[in-house]
Structure formats: C-alpha cells, structure tokens
Image (cartoon, rainbow, N blue to C red; front, side, top):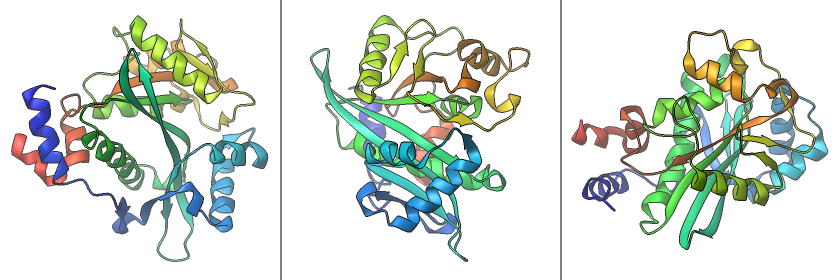
Amino acid sequence: MSHDEAVLREIAADNLRDDFVDERHGLLIVPTSELRPTDRDRMFALLGTCYGNVSREQFETDLSNKQWVLLGSEPQGGRLWMFSTGKQFELTYNGEPTLAFYSGDTASAPEKRGGPTAAGIRLVVRKMYHQVVESPDTKCYWFMISSTFKSYRLLSLLYEDFAPRPGRPLDEEEKLLVAELSRMQGYSYDPVRSICRLPNPSVPAEDTEERGDPGFSDPLAAYFAAMNSGANRGDRLASLTRLTMTNLNSVGRKFVMGDFARQIG
C-alpha cells in the first residue's frame, strides 16, 4: 500500500461509521433479512415503474441472493421512492484475498432523481468504503452491470480509473475476474463487449438518452451504446472499478470522507 493510500484511509476511517443512515433524505441500509413484507411489496411496485418484464418470482429470487438493501422513504406517509440491493463476494483471486461488491436491482422515482438519489448512492459508496478501510490487505472492487447509460456514467463521476471505457478496455486479468464474478452470479459473460446476459432479464423503461446513443456528443454515452447495443433486450455492460482511496476523484473523496476531504484539497 502506498503512503498516500495509507494516509487517505486513516482520514476516511475517522468519518466512516457503520450505521449507514441519512435521516435528512429518509435513507437507510438494512440487512435483507430485516425487510418486512410491506417493504418487499413497496420495492416490487417501484421496480415495476422503472423496468419492464418484471415478475414477483424473479424479484424475490434476486432479493434472496442479496445481503443488504438501501431504502429511501418519504417522512410523511412512508412512500418508498428509492431502493438498491447489494452483496459482496469474498474470494481468492490470483492467490490474493479479494472482495468484490455487486450492485443488484436499483430503482428510483423519476421526481427524486438528482440530489435525493445522489444521497442514496453516497450511502452505498460509504458502506463499501467502510469495508475497504477495514480490509487493508484485501483487493477490493466494485463489480457493476449497467442497463442504462446513467448508471454506467456514475463511475466517471466518482473515479479516476474504471473499465471498460473509451481508450481503457478491461485488461486480460480484469476480464478473467469479471468472468468469474459473472459465473458466481449465474450470468453468461461476453468478454469481447464485456456484456452480462441474465436469465429472463428486466428491461429498463427508459428513453434513448438513458440507454446512450452513438450519435451523442458525449463519448461515454456513445461508447456505452456501441458496447451494449442489446440494452433494450436486457443486456448489461459489466464494469470493474478498483476501490482504493487514491482512485477516487474529488467528488468521490467528498462522498467517502465528507468534510475531511478538505484536508487534502
């Protein structure tokens, strides 16, 4: 571990807690085992407004495979406006202890996209980095599969390096790791385009802008559309991001360290 990485982890440790609650936005992260039947009902209803080809059976199967859930509820009435499921894989890869976080179903009410949804993402990132800081001898990654350009673009807003992206394909070692994580999830993986294909996938109920378009001036949107031309059929672009403090950009550092980020500019 580099000196800079060690210093940043020490700063982050002073700011990261394990309660994962944002009372201002009505957000909290809970173990999947603590979900109430009404929570599951509200999650499934919200998912159906954001995706097509959604069944209760598939939703419950996917949820049973996750370890925790982010819930965003309005203080008055308790309407669920956001949720995101997650899990972590612990494995030995290339002889090294490896931890990979995986983001599953995510849904957010359209009128809440922006600041409130960003607050939910921040809580998820902080949860991951709490584990990263607690695991100094472990290689940590974020394994993301994106059905829309907006979810894929999130990585560019937080990190200096992630793959694949324009001019930065997955290297051979990264491809093998993504293939192994996909296998562990029961997904087929196309290493040429870095595409995961799920059995009976949900399909995003989004417009062309959400999926990306080759004609857009944004090179990242054009890249996503070219790589994931089957997004409207439920294909996911698989990406891998190394979770280190030095890989965070200024926005990512603020997410993880809050006011402590000012100590490093």
